[in-house]
Length: 119
Image (cartoon, rainbow, N blue to C red; front, side):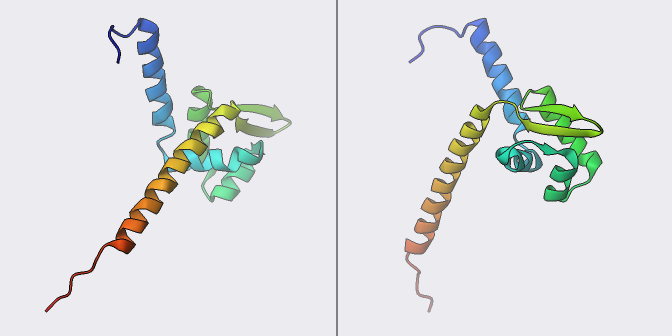
């Protein structure tokens, strides 16, 4: 139980946490992270794997780079992206585990739910 007001640092952390969650709240951005799990990829490869246009992808990548979720490097005319901090993948894995458990639990409830006979 917290018995004192939040410090300015704690409030700032909550603000930044919320901003990061906003960036991660879009399915396409989660798909980008999924593609980058295996390591860095070029923009072209990401676009091909996700089957989205370069303009749309560029907007998502820019937002994720601004929030330091992704980092990039340029080699010639290619831009490569990667997840900036591997701990982010662990956080996503934890959320996925929670979601999978919820889905499994809901499925068991639906299967075990008795059906009512109609007359």
